[in-house]
Image (cartoon, rainbow, N blue to C red; front, side):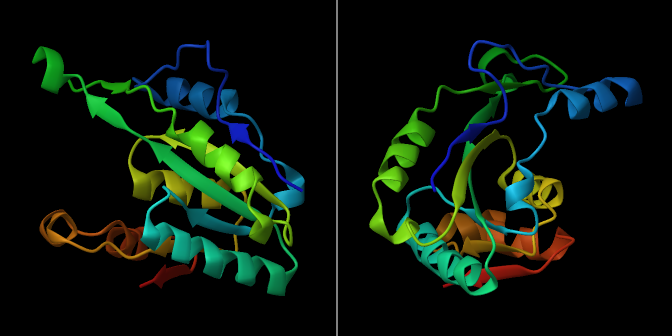
Length: 175
């Protein structure tokens, strides 16, 4: 079983900032409900990198052993408009990211995913926040991510490290 889920229709403009608690509730209610077949599944962050491919392989085995579904999450790029226009407060704009479509097609053709039910969820924003949010929505048993290698992860902190500090469910970091 293969699938692809986007958090909102492509033609609909997304409200980016909630100004009040009522706006926050409206944003939460507008988000599509998760597929109940994937509740208590395994969430895995995937961007096509070698590290995320290893995390995906581990998550597939984990989902297969537990008899649950696999929720593959790709977080699309977002940039603050202050970089572009110098305005305040920072508002985020979505950068066109067709990578999710390409990843979805690659995953749909992958033989190794035939063993478990899976869906691909696209989100935009902070990677750590979005992975934890998807985990919460699906009541995931665990979140699996690949480790970050290189200078950027050392300077700004790795996604895995930040996620492990704030997550409300087990985080598995694959080297």
